[in-house]
Image 1 (cartoon, rainbow, N blue to C red):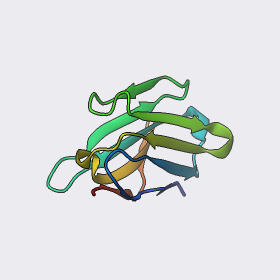
Image 2 (cartoon, rainbow, N blue to C red):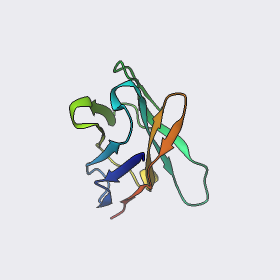
Image 3 (cartoon, rainbow, N blue to C red):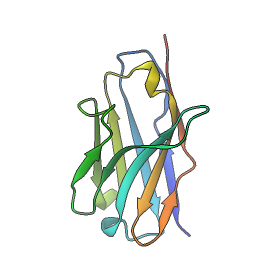
Length: 114
């Protein structure tokens, strides 16, 4: 059974930082492309960042330079380091594993507010 379990969300002030983690099980983690997506209230889910099995990264323009995606294949975990957070970063953040099939986690809430 495939499981993606996100953690690390919470409430943070503007300008603050958070690190999200997504622990994967039930897949051969190292061959999957991994990604973080987010969905704000009333909006569609959008891509935040992806990292391929080979380690290449891609970012949404709105987070480039502030967020960093990384992966640890030994720990079957993908991370999202989020710095200089803004209120518009408030959303539920979802982890995704993609190859021929696609799997999603349940999401973790990130709220940026003073």
